[in-house]
Image 1: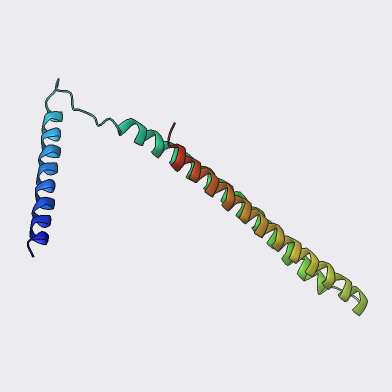
Image 2 (image 1 turned 180 degrees about the vertical axis):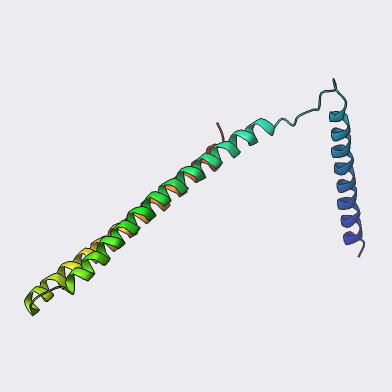
Length: 135
């Protein structure tokens, strides 16, 4: 019955102490000549954040390149689809339609493979960052 009360009291006390420490640190920073103690984990966290930001930036750049390639392939597919309508006889229409469908499936397969590779590379990079840290 008293456990939740004591647990809430403990949490409130910890919060008050942390707030007082933060306030003291900020006040001390206002005085020139007083060095503000930096936590020991501050530098490794900054390195990790920097590497994580670089990894995300690389991933987004590769994703943009992949999307541009897919967009260009889609434009070519549209041009090919319009060319199918220019067939002069049923045999040519059949040939152009088969070529267009084959190219469309190849384009789709390549896009999906590229997305899978990029996803795998991103997961590998992020896993390395998390497991190895910023070392």
